[in-house]
Length: 200
Image 1 (tube, rainbow, N blue to C red):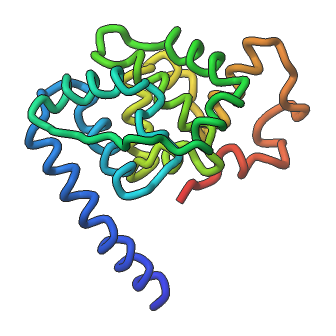
Image 2 (image 1 turned 90 degrees about the vertical axis):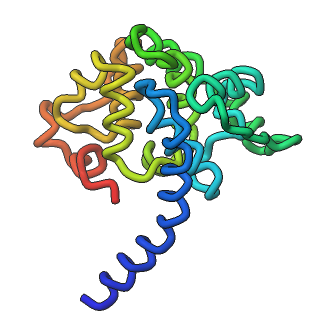
Image 3 (image 1 turned 60 degrees about the vertical axis):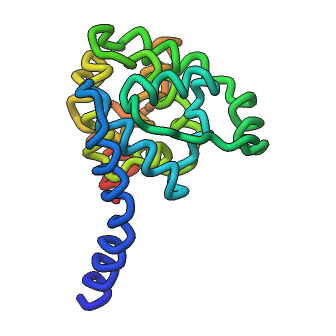
């Protein structure tokens, strides 16, 4: 019991700077639908969380335009050199274009930045942790809000609350007509917890 309270205390202390940064960014936000999500992504990246490249996969100019649209008074300095390993992983990912296409085809075009958010989420899928962690978000709840805001039709299809990365890859497999599960129902599958279990 004591260990859990210590871990919670450490987690709360370590989230203080992140929360302060998000608050700072939101005080300069334009009031667009993705302001809070982008603020959390920027805070996570700054704290070294997740696997996103410095430009979030948008390219230097695309990233700068997106930040300026949401936080026009923010002077954000990108690194002069990007991580070579991240760049190599990005180029190796054969499914990147498919993921971007899937997400963009389900994007809500009324939401400013939803097409760019598709690129960001696709890059997060290259990491080895849960998608919310690979994006550098604070929680799975934030990821759920991102998906509902930007990709409402996809979010509606995930009505059983499958883990997002598994859900997106499952969508790709279904588009290709691939049989990905041998079990007749999710409940009868031995991998049920891997797909639907907690992500903390």
